[in-house]
Length: 152
Image (tube, rainbow, N blue to C red; front, top):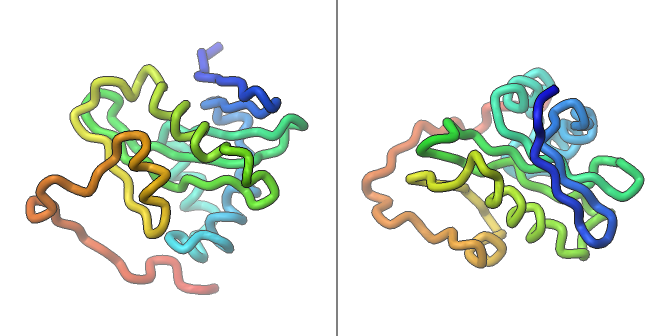
């Protein structure tokens, strides 16, 4: 049996990296219908992304999926935090801060050379954990597809 990273929140929430606990229906629904970055993402794409990432499931005291974060990483030099959310019914309890704090404490994400993320509106959340604007953005390049998941 594999060892998974887990954490317990004082209010009864739990966090786990066990992929068997993830409610992929809830995760896909939120990403495809509510997120600004993955609108209309196909379920198969979410499944492939989850299968190839280090995932952090956030669970309510009753076991329901309450939030999620995904890290794309080689677990040695680089990590990219993405797909972070707390479902609306669970917001207002500091869970996004707790989720990011626990993710950053994961043993496989220590002493990396670079840890990135992109956000439209949550800069203050991430800056409290040490994230800063790119030091030399002129060194970074990207291939960006404006609408990779068109509405069905």
